Image (cartoon, rainbow, N blue to C red; front, side, top):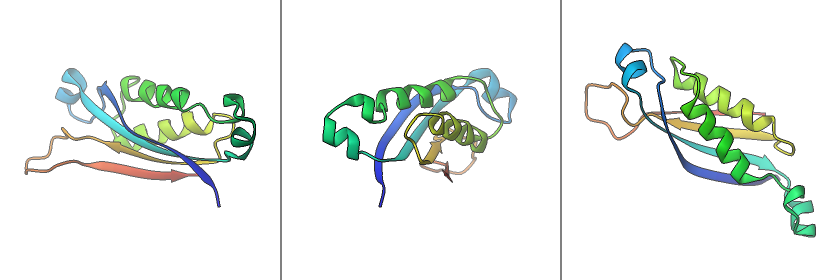
Length: 118
């Protein structure tokens, strides 16, 4: 069984979307991530260097949310997963990207995409 570091509600204002107004005006995006890691050595030594720095992970997620615009939140999720998997000690990730202001014409609370990557 693996250990997990979970960070929820990472917010960033980005310009992702297929419509011109989304690219022009932007909107808030929210990401939740689960990092599969081993915490045994960190717990044994009480040393951050033996763990995955969740502050660094959150910064990487935020950088994607506010960075280069993409048409699809599927692509945003994929870029976030790649940024997290590049971190030493991260074995796999679950990434959910929320687009609560998506251009949907009926009332809705949220739309999101969740991906799992080894």
